[in-house]
Amino acid sequence: MAQYEAVKSQISQLRTLISQLLLQKDGVEKAKSSIDSISNGDDMDTIFPLDPGYTAMIFAKPSDRNHYIIYLGADIFAKLETPEAMKVLTERESELDRAINDLNQRLNQLEKLQEQYEAVLQQIAVALQQQK
Image (cartoon, rainbow, N blue to C red):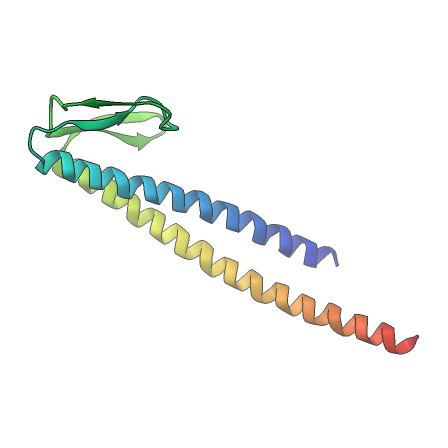
């Protein structure tokens, strides 16, 4: 029974982690789309968030449409030209895809194991009912 509970806990943790990675991937996709729009757009206003939760935003015109500040990891940011920024984000997106796929495979394995445990527990419950 303890193994069954451990598997359930691992499944829950994996689902949470996959959700977090999907959110990160969505952020990377939006960043790439925004860079593409800004780089190829005309001199129109762009909406910039003033906080991470998008509680407040401002209309502004980017002063430089060819350079972007990109997070590289470990609290390091770099000012990169458009092609390099897109390359870094595309690589990050690929890394996230691989991680999500690996975690989904592990999740599928654990869900199958959970089903096996549930089948055994059901058999035990039936056997106990028949003994009464």
